[in-house]
Length: 150
Image 1: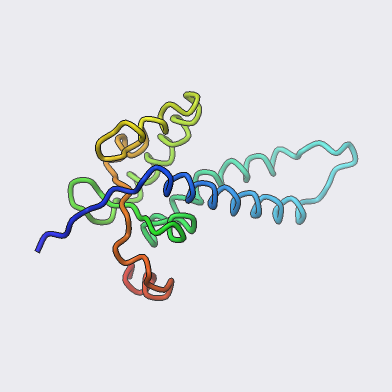
Image 2 (image 1 turned 90 degrees about the horizontal axis):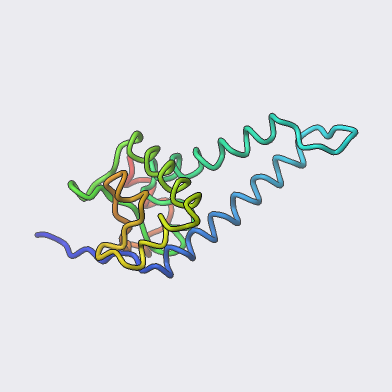
């Protein structure tokens, strides 16, 4: 039996992105608190490299394991492969993350196309061949989602 897919609404995607941004900032604050300070109060290059790497690895890590970032989980949405309706591979998730950054750097235009696209895909989704859908099983616990991802 084929299940019906409901594309995630733009508001749900914005909500999940804001939650993930909040968690990212919290991670940076914790990292900054643990980082040795210099006398001239400049930001060490190592900290900037790790902060930039987190932008990339945060979504790839969560999407690989759970098909959703923590923000997406709380918003009740998840990511699927366009063709198979299943789990995208790590390379496609990395490409999606790079596309997200590119879409943001293009004055957000890569993200704004979500508002006009029939399948609610942004530039990053189109590049990676992914869809963000409403999770029909959004009421499952994190433990159940983890068990299903194995």
